[in-house]
Amino acid sequence: MVNKPAAWEGCHPLLDAEDAVLLIEDGTYLAQQALSGATLYALEPDIRARGLSQRIHSNIRPASFDDFVRLVESCERVVTWSA
Amino acid sequence: MVISIAVHGAPYASAGSRTALRFAESALRLGHRIHRVFFYHDGVLAAAGQGVAPQDEEDLHASWVRLGESHGVELAVCIANALKRGMLDEAERERYEKDVATAHPAFTIVGLGQLIEAMTASDRFVTFAA
Image (cartoon, rainbow over all chains, first blue to last red; front, side, top):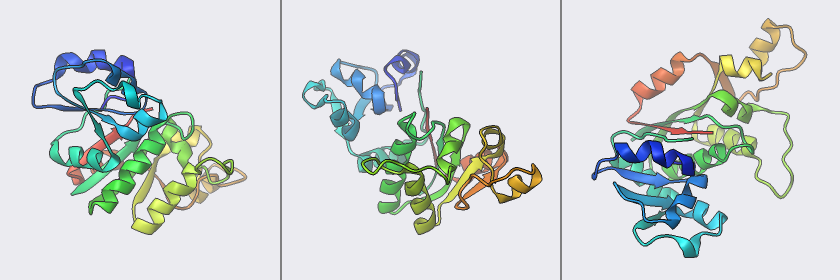
């Protein structure tokens, strides 16, 4: 989970291909660019609240809160990155 | 699945308290159990029982109380962070001889051990940063 754009730099070098990253809150600003290193999701209500709906890069999947819960189910550990 | 949550940010100042609420509501709707919500750092201010939210804004305190009371979710407030921010329940008010108990009774004031217990007793632990 990444909740601020500046947190990406700390998180990115540690990612494995099988990891999932969920961008939330101001972290969704990152979804405007092509990010790599893991499967990437961005929390849809936070995208909408920031007017980013038309600017999301094609390799980032929008996620609802229910999707957020399902991601937490599927990942054994959840790490929060914040700047 | 048993899930516990930590909330580090103050309501309104940080988005984390509201994000955590929406996550908890979804988790409960999908059939999971929330073992404990642990309010840490400025997150403890969610317990403030005397706040009045503007009519056109969500009352985050009231939403947490509703979540706790309607789903039996434990709302745990870190004692060290709570006391220095003026967040006292009736027992702490009496102990420190203050005028008013500021924390709503739906929240319990606990030690840091309850954060560790939540991590070990839950299948998943999710931290919402400030």
